[in-house]
Length: 551
Image (cartoon, rainbow, N blue to C red; front, side, top):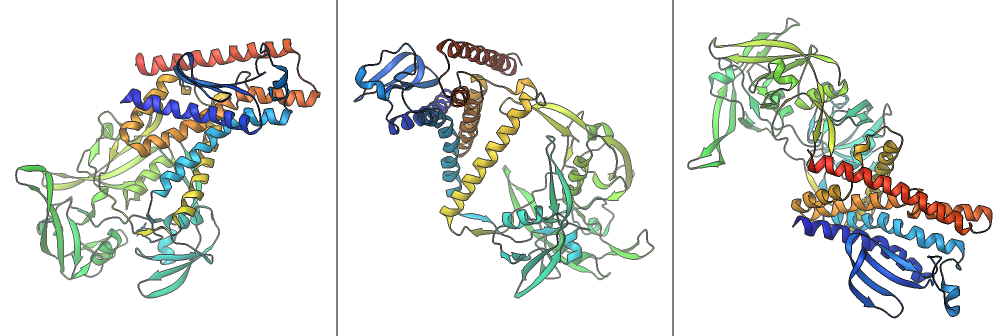
């Protein structure tokens, strides 16, 4: 099937590109001699009224042959006016530009088809609130529905998210619905540098809310704590406290943090189905949790239950990683980072990414069965940057810590999309623009030397992309096709002779001179273009061989 995916992707992209040239030429009354998909010996030919259509042996390209485009063409007297060089310059520019333009337009239709298939979007409902955040100080609660931002109505989470991210240090007025009440809150997003482990960074506004709620999954590090004594274990999910339902971690934390009275807990525990190890059954249980008084660093007495957020428990450690060498092990409870208490793994991860080369002091707790007690540990950890291969065979650099938590974040509320066609069209145009901008930035990085030359790929890279995306399903395959289509369109617009962009440059020169370039000059430009394309081709093939055959 990999070959089928590859031929389908190449075939569609080539046909679309050449059809752009073909359609523009036909509409502007050029004499089109041949429309070819592929190069080399023809495998199939069909003769139209005035154009020959063919499929050739080598499917890595194609061409549209227009009368007079080749200086050696013999032009019948009655067709001189329809030959390429006899047409006005603007018409020739349109025909040449139409090929890359078709590749840049195709993603709009692909993205439209993908987005039109969506019927629901995440609602503008707060799933959870991070501790010590602007949202907490503004009094925003989990479950609040945001109806409007600065008077502009919002329905979807992405509308709320964009409004916050674009408003650094600008006070926003949120109209909020909480149960049967509607009221307004004022909040000022703070500046936040959002970094990812592949090195990307983006400056945006931040208020500390999440779409998905932190589930009320608990962890118990100390069997001798109140939670441990009543049989609660790491991974249990609390569903009610004293008869009040619990749907997120914030609600659970508040329910357990006030008063020393006993709490009646209802919780779910996953058990393995007999004889079916891959199936987990949820068993409802009850417990009476009695807090113990514990004095904090400020001297105040607070209720202690031993209930911790499950997501701060380490569930996996990569061998040889900084976390592994530092001594972290599955079952450890992350407590602090550089002395600052950690409330969620998402906060820990953001902090780690904010300073890639910093030596962090990580504190954690571990239960020692042989000593029957919990011990506190801390050590300095410096993350490393590791070159890895992604599933498409590309080399990527990732910041590695090496420990993680596998707690499922759950999902936020969804709402039906209003005006699906309008939504799909606007999203398709926007996504095409974003993809094109990202590709332009990538090309510039390669040409300016800021990105390695091994980023350039050839047929084997495209084969791998088609194969992997095809195995993932049609939606992934179409999205990859859109990406490569933009790539192909931009490559053809490069000001390299032989490519469409080179022809456009020649036309610009001729427009400036007021006359055509001499034939000898055009031939020399053509040879230079062939040399440049040959160098790029050799580089791409060399990278393909190293990446896929010699690795």
